[in-house]
Amino acid sequence: MDRDELGRLIAHLRDIGNDTQECEVKEAAKKVPASLVETLSAFSNGDGGTVILGISERDGFTAVHGFDARAMQEAFNAECEKLTPRVRPVIEILPFEGSHVLVAHIPPMAPRDRPCYVTIRGRYQGSYIRSGDGDRRLTPYEIDRMIENQSQPTFDDEVVEPATLHDLDASLVSAFIARQRELHPRVFGERSDEEILLGMHVIKHGDGGDSDSHPTLGGLMALGTFPQQFFPRLNVTFTAFPGVGKGEVVEGGRRFLDAQTIVGPIPSMIEDALAAVTRNMRVGAVIDGAFRKDVPDYPRKAVREALSNALMHRDYSYEARGSQVQVNMYADRLEILNPGGLYGNVTVDTLGTVGMSSSRNQFLSNILETTPYPGGGYVVENRGTGYMVIEEELQSALMDPPRPMSTLTFFSLTFDKRRRSTSEKDQRNWSRELVDDALCQVLRERNSASAKELANSSGLSRSAIGNHLRMLIERGIVEPTEPPHSPRQRYRLVEKIK
Image (tube, rainbow, N blue to C red; front, side):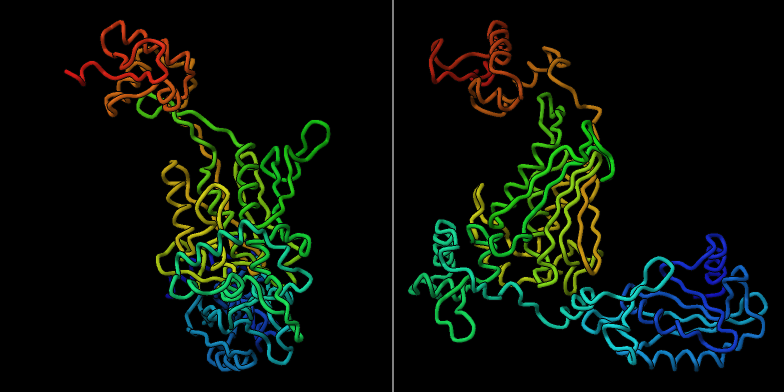
């Protein structure tokens, strides 16, 4: 930071009248304040920040007369020694309005080293995070989530001893095993079904000498019939609100337009949540060439991907098992929220970057990769490409990029509702010439088409398509390929057979 940058920063603080999320000023006229260690912890556990000593906030962010920046530098470094791990700031002394101030840049601590805490107070009483213009003590849950980054969590691999193999869906398990044998014949080709399930951590032997096999949490969530029998809140809640917040009410005093608690294994919950979003969103019609193209408020593929990621990467720790994945639809946006922030080396800034992928639930992720999805295929690809798919789908729909937000306690992904295009119109506004041109364009691209195929392509009714085809036949532009009333009737352009 140079003198000009310092001047602009102090001018901003004077403008708003207080500290910011990224900057804290302290007088430190004679000694460093006791709260400095809390600020050092808070910046280290977050995105970093700047501490400026020798500026008086109560006097309008003016320089402190007689401030000894050189002596204060030693005291500042001594405060850094009071934290575990030790904070290593970059310290500068800069002139400011006839005096000198100490400017210390606090870098964010590496995820594997967090939480940074005041040593004498201990990890659970001395860890802080920046919140607005102040420092807030971290909760035990937040601290535990930081500690998770020091090793691989295994909550998804825990044995659910009250559950038995009968609590797994036989059809899902059968398809899962068949896929494993197909993908890995050298490993699983000659193994029994139980050995495959044990190898993939779908089931494990019980603790305490129990020789029976039981589903793991990951196996139950992916392939179970009703996981919520054992974990009632590991579900999905869908709510459609009438306005842009949760406080608005609709006729009759209800605060929502639609609500559903969605249960079952992960593939079923994804499908049911996607169906809930679909039935509550508008599907507009835009002109693609000259035919109508249905365009939903939110691309289904992007929504499905976001739901899959939320259920695969959510926090399954003991403290989070009382929290569900939420799908909230507002008048202007769709929000998908899951317990637990981003894990490992992934940040909001690196989401969607090739090669940046960390799995909080590594066993569940592997299981879902070959768990059948109701609509065909499998639940996830597990290649770290999910966020890129979401971005591409929104871009293809000419929509704004998704808006991610990650904290220690939750991750949310927000899709802004698609704006109505100027080309959107309903079929009542289509001219005969426009539809005729569109029909000819389709027939020009194909050898032939049935009336049903043309109706599906256009969004028009079969009767409307029939009227247009008759007119085109009378004009000698289109001809039928079969005699009248033939069930195999198709149509083609006359010009294509000349």
